[in-house]
Image (cartoon, rainbow, N blue to C red; front, side):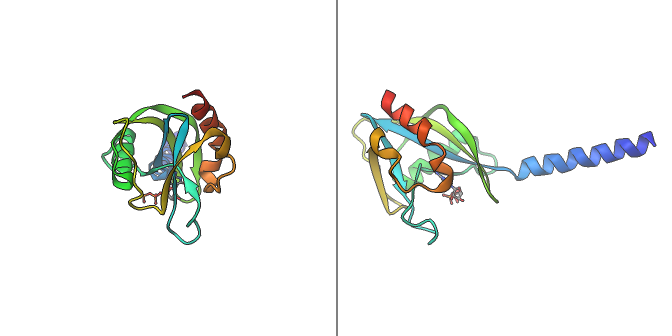
Length: 152
Ligand code: CDP
């Protein structure tokens, strides 16, 4: 009986680690400059086109979250960012994993992000953040984003 219980426990532990392995992290960047937050407007898929989100994307195998954030910002906007630390809660992304946000600085003060993969890139003041048509996960972050944007 003891052996059978141990075996059952081990199966549960293995299933649990499979679940954790499957919970993919999507990293997002909260970049603030001169009292404004950098946001992007999605161009795809159709269901999300026109909605606003923080820059970011999936952490690839073998990559740290910070590396993924730097890579995604470079791919999406042609800029180099320096991640500073976590912001706000992890947000569940149904069927995908977890959205985890880091604050980040733009490497150079004069550089302008471009919309490479998105429809538009915009700098938005704290007072206008709540009024954006956010994707669902990012909307949860709005209070944390307003607080961050007001303090910088
Ligand atoms: O480029 P990659 O496929 O790595 O990432 P993505 O397609 O931009 O995002 C992966 C998933 O995270 C999608 O389901 C996005 O909708 C979601 N996401 C999000 O909810 N909020 C963000 N700021 C970025 C991505």
